[in-house]
Length: 120
Image (cartoon, rainbow, N blue to C red):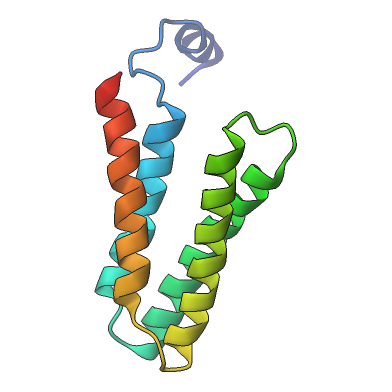
């Protein structure tokens, strides 16, 4: 592609709609939850739990920001779920917990995100 074609496409109307924040969050949860559901071996479980932990750490960091505009009670609940997910992930890794709890929490979040999307 030459410079003229690049410039032309750079300023052309966007063909695909921009994604909403909820859509992006939903996709992140879907990907991580699939990893949790499909993990069979110890290394797969460890990776899935790490991915889940990273997602929840990002969310906890976001809701901890004083500039976050979500209602304070919702921010507190999300932070609690992050703490729960971290603790449950440790339990799964040491053999005293189940992936089902992590999958259930993530699935509930996905259902809420889907509800928000459908309400629009």
